[in-house]
Amino acid sequence: MPVDMARRRQYEGRLRQVAKRFGFREIATPIFENSELFTIKSGPNIVDEIYAFQDKGGREIALRPELTAPVIRMFVNELSNEPRPLKLFYFGQCFRYERPQSGRYREFFQFGAELIGNANPESDAEMVALAHSMIESLGLSDYCIRIGHIGVLRQSLREAGVRDDDLPTVLQKLDKKNYEESRPLLQACGVSEEDIQRIEVLTETVGGPEVLEHLQNEAGDYLRQMLVFLDALGVKDVSFDLGVVRGLDYYTGMVFEAEAPVLGAEKQICGGGSYSLSELFGGEKVFSTGFAIGFDRILLALEKEGKVCQIDRLDAYVVPVSDEVRPAAFRVLADLRNAGLDADIDLMRRKMGKALKHASSLGASMAVIVGSAELEQGAVTIRDMASGEQSLVSMDELVDFFHC
Ligand code: HAM
Image (cartoon, rainbow, N blue to C red):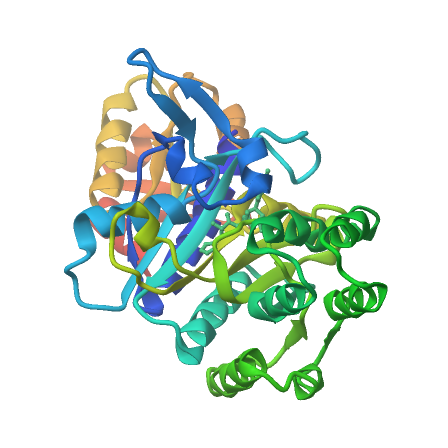
């Protein structure tokens, strides 16, 4: 609807501005791709939800469920010789065959960013800082960012005897904290009761930097270094959660999610982490890190917090008082538009009172009333729609009147 689109465009504009401020450049990829692009490494969650079909040439095609794989495909095909890191962002719709509910749609928009080039704590910190600034720019007040490391859980599972082939399914259950289903799977892999309990405790470990003190391994060192950079970037209100698994299978290191509790069940507004995909699409192995914000979901959260942004208003609404002055009123309209103002005119031949009412319903700041007596003096009447105050303004000064 027009009112929704005006709001969406304004929020989209804010996100774009922040991405540019962080040195990211915008890209766009096709809505559909070969299905294989998404089935190769996205994991069982995504594969179950894919909108896939055969085209007229018998090719297996899928509507994109996310944009990370398409961006990396584009990188391998077109951008692999560019200086690194590549900092890219995108805004576009995705499709997932899920059970629709509040905040979960079959068609939805993601605003995301990918940093292609290196796996180091400062690159990951840069991405979390970007997500943080984007969420802040929209004005959401109640949200939290939780950072984890997929390596911690993967390593614990491997040490407990889970084979690499079984990892995605087990991780999928642990991601949803679905212990009823993860337990029998772990038991079938020969994992001891003690190890199962240890793994469950790990996935429930959440808190401040003190969580990292218990992590005496590479992942712990990595997250501690990341914290130093986050602190330097002014991102202080994050927590650490060793249970962040993510629904997608391609993550290799740091992973993070942002949640807005106001949304209830579907509260995840952003998700991401570091990964490596390019080698699967025929390129050299390049580490990347990125995230995507669920645009529709974050807008829903803003709405629930009562933070609906003011929509851009019309600067001027021109009201011809009679049929004779109509052409002159259109000249005034053209002058206003040529001066860069948002201006409209009554096209329904309404009487003055009704036309002013309409101007007010359109959200015009000023009505420009064009009458024959004023025209003879080379002037028009301007009515401030908020106060009702009217003043006579000479035609020569009309544009200046709006600009000051
Ligand atoms: P994802 O967590 O699957 O990650 O999706 C990112 C965000 O999209 C979610 O946090 C959620 O807000 C939103 N979202 C997901 N599904 C739906 C849905 N059915 N309806 C409405 N919103 C939804 C990815 O897609 C990764 N590509 C993110 C990434 C980029 N990782 C690295 N780079």
